[in-house]
Length: 276
Image 1 (cartoon, rainbow, N blue to C red):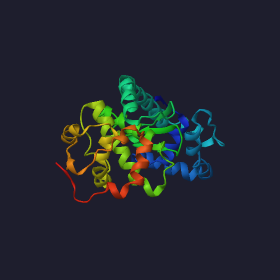
Image 2: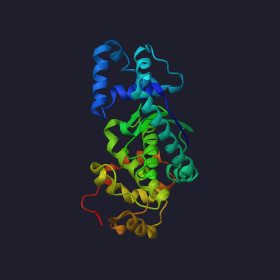
Image 3: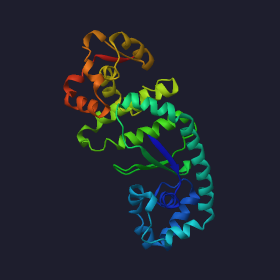
Image 4: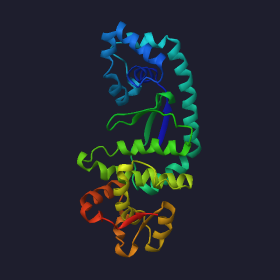
């Protein structure tokens, strides 16, 4: 996987106009712009999907509003800060990309597309933009530099999750639980040396705990390895109640998700797991 960090004036402007206002002055700026350029404001609402679909070749149908914003002091400041933020995110990736790719190969056991574009937005915008199936995401969050490895993990999670968009919506909880185990937990643990099992979407905690024993089998763990993983991740289950299904280690991530979907009634065991 190669991540290409870049900026784009159009997407930055679009998010400024359609994202949440991060200050009163920005809110006032957007309100005034809407009142004076209502037709143009409404006409560019569709542009985000087009940008994420083909950011390199995007040309707006009407540049009037974009060009107006480009000349403002607000945009100039945002652009300068965003350029600096891009360099910070690029630095995080450059320092960790070899280890990250090695770990991803071990966990995913398959290759997705080689190149993905991360269009950096100002972190104060606190925004992640995704278009189903696209290899481009918009990214800029307030916590980006608080824990750089978690930020890298979250970017990778967003990319990998977007590659699973074809699973039926009714199975989204299973898909998301497996992705949290794969990227939010295992990828981050191997990259940082710290477990993040207890972090993530609280609504998925129970389901993750149920899938966890089979997840260890997918990783290729022998029965004698289970205890060390449970201690690392602070989750406990009765090892003797699970038959090690060695064929799971031969699956890739998408195949493992299919296994969980097809065997969900076997996997979910009420009252047999506990957080320690």
